[in-house]
Image (tube, rainbow, N blue to C red; front, side, top):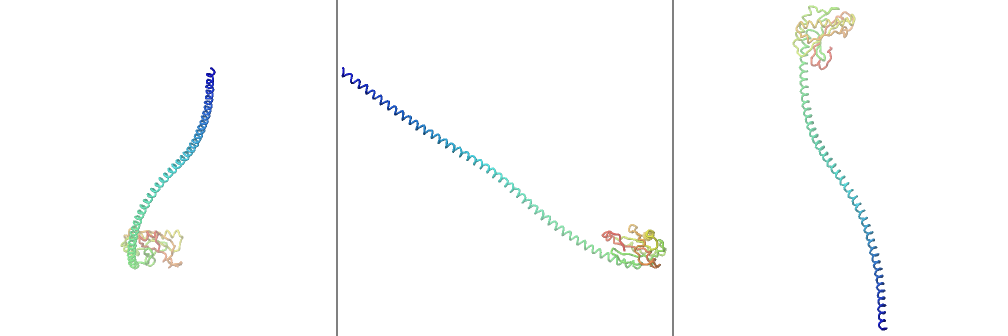
Length: 289
């Protein structure tokens, strides 16, 4: 009996010892598990932190890259605008160049036309001057012949515009304070009219004068009546009245100075001016001797 109890105790003690061993092993394993969990958790946290850092860096890089892309896009738009403006400027410059070339061509054509017009005008001016010179020469010859013919009737001299005949005491004598033309002087006026009727392109001016006796107002009227009397005689002889102009100058412009009877007789006179109508138009002044 005693022999059988001893093994049973040994079995229980072995069992307790085994259980304790298992408990210690469990504790060790639990500790190891905790350590592993802690290690794995720490590694995981470190990985998460590292990943967050990387994500933050990546976000910053992405943001910087986005800003660069935005800046690049703005630069691209600016370059595109500049390129478009440059193209527009180039087109405008080309248009201005074409317009300048056209203007230059037009100016050259106008200059050529102006040169041709100037040459034509110069030629016409030369022709006109030549004709004018021929006309002056012709008129000069006519006036010389006319002076010779009229000089045989009454005193005749040249002026810048034509001829002047003086009808004084040697051809037509006017009595004191009289404007009538005596019958014996009619033949002289008829001869003068006969010569003047052959002229073309001339105007006739009849000027009356008096001596120094009397007032200026009276003598202006008297000299005007003397010029009118000569004009009427020329018209009666056949001269176109539209060609004759009369004017009285009174006692102004005496032909002979002094108050003697001879001087006063010489100053009571009428002068007939024969003027080239073209020269008269050029001078635009009333011809005087």
